Image (cartoon, rainbow, N blue to C red; front, side, top):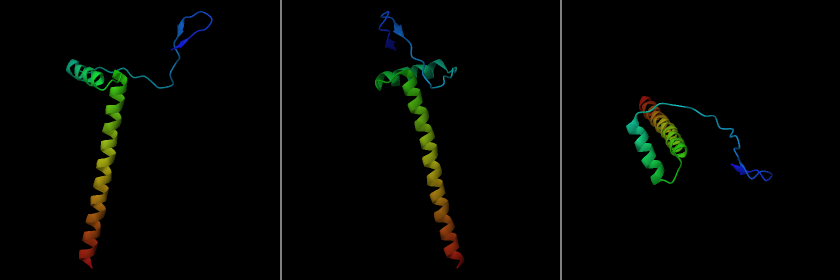
Length: 81
């Protein structure tokens, strides 16, 4: 929000980020509310952080699996010689 110098009214500045509306169980909403308060984040900030963390965890798991596969392939190739 910004202050309109001419009228003193608060103006809403549109954000470029898209919005989504979802339904979640009340118990999950309560957990998110508690977590956002504990971390001093907005509810949106808490949800975004948790979603980003989940994608990072997926990426990290994929990298670990790929590294294990490469190691396994090297071990199998070495045995075959």
